[in-house]
Image (cartoon, rainbow, N blue to C red; front, side):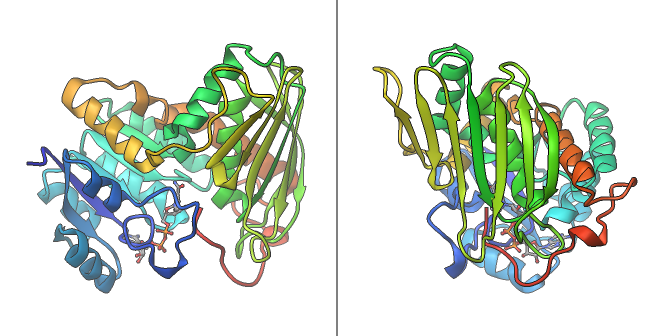
Length: 338
Ligand SMILES: NC(=O)c1ccc[n+]([C@@H]2O[C@H](COP(=O)([O-])OP(=O)(O)OC[C@H]3O[C@@H](n4cnc5c(N)ncnc54)[C@H](O)[C@@H]3O)[C@@H](O)[C@H]2O)c1
């Protein structure tokens, strides 16, 4: 019998209806990961599109609620998941944290917010609500390959970082959180933005930025370049050390260390990051072990978001209030899931 109740807000692709546009790198949907384990059940679902909610509930179960506050108040949830479009995350996270029935775990898909001012507001709300852990689903933080690599780098196994490069697609606000947060994870510390400029097409209203950074622990140059996802969806990172070159390709599914030492080199993991996320939720809810969840809590990923906003400001794609400006507005069609 499942012990814990999950409520889904936003019943689209990431929640459990990937449909035909699912591509190989999809990190696994919430519903599939919940169905895979035995500890959780989908108890409730809300989507502003009633047909989406009905389709989702008929496939995965869950009582349909007309809005998020009603769901939080009525469904006795242990976990709530916000899997709506990017620009709704901050408002819905604030709704969750303001509910008297806020669950023990509130999972928000990346990005947790799209403006700097929202980040400050969410951090304050989360701090005032210590009984709830706000977890941002930056999926590499739940991927064993990335976590092992991060530990190897931090332990100095390959020596001091010489340089790093990253190529990504899908827009700076949409995909940048993965870029910045993965680079922070893998380069062993904080980064500084030296230069940022508008680059390739990202998504409508969300261009890719080309960003030059410095890794603060090593002083190494970190070069980030955007690619047009309509031509080639990509998320690749290369890290050069004196003793090895590490390539993270295929949206993080393949990690190759060259030359490989006896205890390194890994290519993917049988456990999808979303499954690992629910494993971490279950360890917390059953045993009070917060370690894995806290690695991706809002407070831990806030520096990644601050860096993302630093780059936007340097590139001139937002005004002083953090609102997008015309120079940053792209045109044409949307991108694939990331
Ligand atoms: N962590 C990852 O690696 C990863 C991967 C894919 C997507 N995502 C994120 O997941 C989120 C959802 O992406 P998707 O591809 O599933 O989008 P989607 O468009 O397929 O689904 C979003 C759903 O939310 C509903 N919705 C919109 N506004 C709402 C609101 N205010 N309240 C309730 N429901 C609302 C829509 O009707 C739709 O059904 C995005 O923010 C995306 O960045 C993260």
